[in-house]
Length: 396
Image (cartoon, rainbow, N blue to C red; front, top):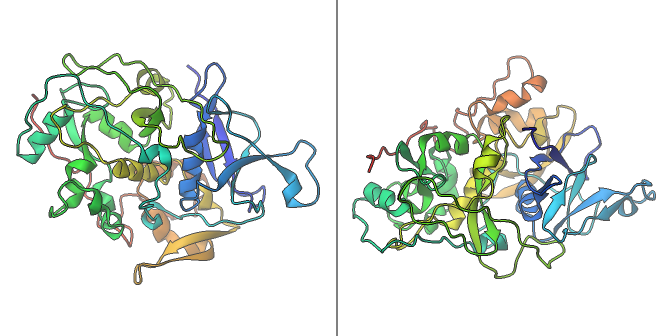
């Protein structure tokens, strides 16, 4: 099975010699390749410091347009089917009406600010369906309660060989605390709020690894509520959920229409197995006796963590350009725009990336001799990485 092509998204404030802002796999659309419009817009918006409500896609005019920048581009409206089609030439991601605006980008996940009270509408209306089995009383012990709530892996439905996985990972504990994420916890007085049930879910061990490497994400999808049955015999044969067209021309919203979590292949594997097995499959339902489920805010934070990992985000790796970035000052907690070259950005900004330890291999071709972008090393705003620290749970 051939890999789907990648769609290039450009920052209009930089020359053609600059790297693409992002390259996203065209994993949606049949038979033509494309990507869900909302996912593409929010993904680019995360990089652009949470600018998705006033953002839009454009493309260069065939004739090159006039001398004015405003005449060089034309808007690309949201397609009726909700899928932004693949094309050989790049899309441009704009913020506001000024096409010449050199908007700032976030340099790493550690500098990304969580958008409290400003989630994209698809994420704000996210609902988690529960299974159809008879409601049960969950155990009081946290680990047992979580395992009973999820009834097995939330991706595959299997119980055997499962772990408990954090959405915001342990190595981002400093970011978690600095952004006040404990407000979304079920038990806000917990000593280690990052271990709260709202930030954790049960996954099979191989899915933990695949999710951690950025191949899979969990995203909202509008439409009919998924009808996956309660887990009794392992993996469920739930029908994929397809995008629902929106009447809004630009913004990533379906108004107050309910959305439901689905598995999304963000980075396809070379064998095409992930697309066949998991793409657009609904998240397995939780136990109907559970008082609450995963918090949408933690799912969105995990999505941003994946977007800003080295496997996806390499825009700032050119040595010959200055980049406009939004930097967090750890002393004051304030953020400021600053134009910085790669050398000024410094090794610390890249070593604190929250992607996988192998992620930097994708950009080894442009590294200075002796430079080591080890994602396992702690950033200046994060606590030291704790490895794959997960609770071990008994097999039911």
